Length: 239
Length: 147
Image (cartoon, rainbow over all chains, first blue to last red; front, side):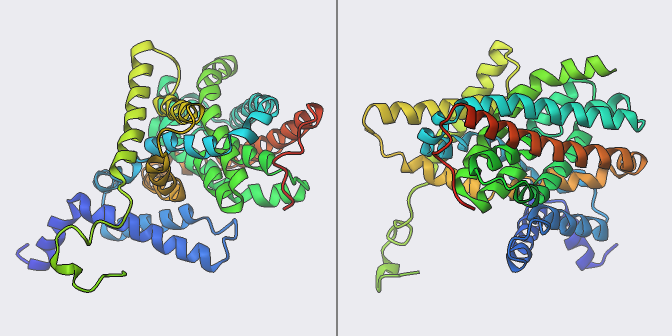
């Protein structure tokens, strides 16, 4: 293995720099594709970026662990971004205060419905044990879902994947479903998106309308609290 | 961008234009750190970043009550920057799908059915309950935007 090109690759493929760059470039490319398709809900930028990045990993035979050493710097920012949700919340504080009761009712009903239906369907179709436990926090934002799944005896990495798939499904479904329902209240649309599909639903809501985005952010934060409390109870009842 | 002729020679002038982002980033991280510390110290079943969000909100509201002694744009700028690129932050975890292909392949139908139906139900129930309670409390006029 004295090929200089190969040794350069061996060097670069082990540095965080390469995989951080690949993550950002994949995202930029995915965002362009999404913009070219006029932000159609199916052209979700996260899905496109994941496909591009996974293809690069597959083509180069790079293990996920190596990739994540670079990508972790982006992943880390999920926490600060959750804190940053205080800003749109503050900006829209008057609207939010006027909708306190609808928010709390929708939070409890939606969180319970989403989690219970997911667990019941999966169990009826033969899923059990740690996979079922990893499924319980699927509507919760990634970092928090991983913690909940671990606490329930699930697989944190699988929980993250199921969360991301849920987010993608929600981000794709929310606009057509809400339009089909004739839902015109941007607060309700956003709140549903953030509750059912966490950060990806929130990102989608922000591209549709700033009020929707704000309510999505609130729903995401509140659902993380409710799910953390609800998941152990529901799972124990079903096992 | 907008280089003043002759500014190249003077150190400092080229970087002087953008609003500083470190103070805002530091405040956001500090809120998260306090949130994590509170959660781990007290054993509350709450996520640290969510407690951090509440802390930042309380700071902003407090500033508002005191008739804005601090220009909050130092923190709203970096916060908006993060939220504008929320999708990017989920890419690394999403790529983790390559590591769990075996489990997904073994249960693909059950998991797909469960995730699609439960997400659909979650969206519909949440939006319907929100609108129903908003109508009951008769305060739904605000925030309603024609789409």
